[in-house]
Amino acid sequence: GIVFNDVYAASKFAVEGFCESLVVQALRFNVAISLVEPGPVTTEFEMKLYEEAERADYSRTDPETADIFTNLYLRNSRDVFASLGQTPEDIAEVTGGLGAAPIPP
Image (cartoon, rainbow, N blue to C red; front, side, top):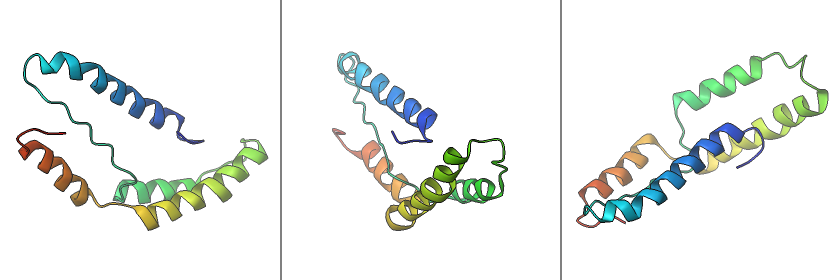
């Protein structure tokens, strides 16, 4: 996880741990569990978040945190999505391939 993504990271780690815990139990029933953890996925949702973050009022936030969020985190996050962002179709292709695999990883 990274700063300003605490709840998001916690939820992803929780799902990962849940899936890992189920793997052994599911094998007993010949059920395979695959966990798809995409990197940044470029969507309208992500773009709207940036737009809202840029318009937000940070006057009640301590200046150092507001500066880190607006000038470092947002800028770097946009750069990551711009350079590494996957499309929803990319994710669907991988996920669909897992469902069609005789023995999914």
